Image (tube, rainbow, N blue to C red; front, side, top):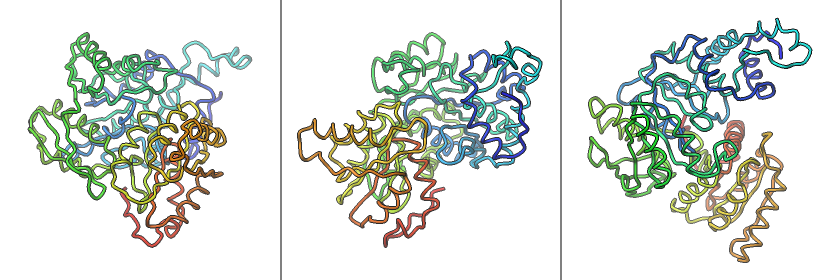
Length: 473
């Protein structure tokens, strides 16, 4: 590891992408110390901190849109990105420019204690890092950049999404929070967070801060007890959101209308421009958070409903073209929520699913849910460009075993295999008829590749005589 001369945006991105090769997770104490080294840029932020297994990014988006509708400025740090790393930094509704990205990168880079390496003869001989040397991980580096970029922007509120976990997440190094939000908990990243929902909840509960409200989804008693116990221990205010707090009214024209029970506004009617039923609970969490934040003083019911109506979060039952939907479902719980939305969307033609997954997910369980649902007339598999990708032959073998074990001809839909995402899109979209609907799910890497490819494919390849969907960006 040596200090490099980095002068361009592309060089900065390349360096960031190579960080996992020479560093590992740092302690929370070291992360906090480096944040202080940067001048504690977070100290004046009014922070809304969001953790959970599924739905974190959606809650961040709903919070942002409602706050902006109410006249507040926001900065939002989320992960992962789908196509461009700058998606992780939203400053007052805009993705950060390449120039500002580079400036933020270099400010962090210059604070890395390179002099400790240069003065250490043992490092030059053995490669062992000297005591006191700190280099951020990929996620830590981006978080530090976000803090620097947001400090300059001086927003009214900063919305932070955790990366992995909560207790030891880099975003938890901030000094003060207005409130915390914890979304749905399910089994994911069990090698890092624990192999039970309660253990994972314990890690997520690590973002709860003394004196600040914690808004959480009250979906399972044992999980909720973890949050309640932690809140009581710290003197935080527990604010559960329950399933009875929101009621589906109708699904029409790919919109979801539902009634939401609130603390300050009584029952309000909300319309979300999405086909994803799971977004009701995410919107309910965001509204409850704003109620705790504002106490009904400045934000009105109209601003809440208008903000939610304008909200958009890419890759979550997003219609990329006419009857072509991508969804970021990438674990068992996410797939179940995805299938619930598909089953309720009212489409009467043939459904086709394009699927892929990374190897550290339970893709066998995900495929089992998909095949058992009997929602798709055809299942297509594709590889994705990631070191974590599952070989497409393994996906095929797994799917066939599940079909055979079912012993039911009705679940033995044909399985197509492609050599790349681009090949899959060109074939599926090129042959698509008006009586077919294509769904794409299983991995956020897959969603990112699809979005990147649809950005360069000719519109005629997926329009097929129907109106092109207007851009939602």
